[in-house]
Image (cartoon, rainbow over all chains, first blue to last red; front, side):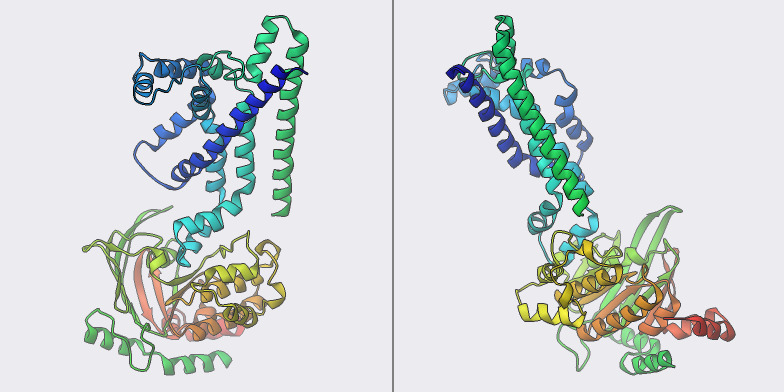
Length: 224
Length: 281
């Protein structure tokens, strides 16, 4: 097993880990708003967040690349003010990955929140507890399976992501070359053995994650 | 016979409808603490209008009343009459379209002045129809969660009072309907509410359990020494527990007064006696 192989897998894990962590932090408030609040254009917001589930990854990747480009508004601003270049960098790939994986985090969290009986929240409010206390002490503990599903699905999806990353990040070893891209690259170079090694690792990780999700959810359902 | 005694003892401590009307005219719709009662023991003044969207279409809920301290008022009426909506409005869970709600000297809701206190600031104890016990917490923790300030002695008191000591470490999912009901009642009381609201608390219970828990409710009401509002479909239960009853029909108050008077006028004396004789609760 060469260093390049290990570095690629570590980079894949790093991207998936950071994406999941960022989405976990920003996903909860968004899911809460979508689950419990009424606001204008809510359906539009829900559709927008769900777009990555139906949109070809290359479409999002293309627009992200345009935005990152030094000729684009965001790209030129970041380069001029912060001297940051997002196109073909890990940071750029991470942002694209966060946007592309948004529904995989938001939807299970939103479903988990809406599945909790309204009376539990209301009971907590009538007992004098704030929305934040209710969220932390009542809602989160009663949606653990949804949280596990959201985290695992986001992580698993990130590990297998290809289209957006190749559009935004290209294939730079140690910077943007994740396992899925390495597989494509190795197949192009007819290195089937290495491609198989990467594929087996991704297959194994995905299988383990999904098995964990199903077993935890089954155990929770049985307990309740 | 027992029911009769209960009714008589209640009538000594609570003003009659005539007295209430007299008091209302004296205070002119604002609350005045009665002599001999605690400072927070205010009356509850309600004057609200709210459009309800029911399966039978849109209905206007309109209630104008004043509930006196120590009163155990039962809300009676058909499904969709507005009983639960009234409780939800009072608890701050549903915002009425128009009107004013004042408890003691505190304005809970005033549509003209745009005042609408959130449920957290109304200090009500609400017992939901489905009990709404927190599944992640043990019985003990459910009660402790309700406390505004941590008080272990009070937790023990509630557990003892409602015979829950042995069940303290169990989760709500491991309890029977009657046990859940007791926990819900204990939790509502642990918050030391100014107004206790019970939404059909005994509807899902068998006759024996119902009788036992009616006793718990009365105990809870006496312990709180404040206003209790209870939704019930059971006339016997209302006669047994309430100091007064409000009959709702299609969102409006049809009758209001003492339970035995209200229900006696509904049915003939013979029917009433027969109902009493058949009642197991």
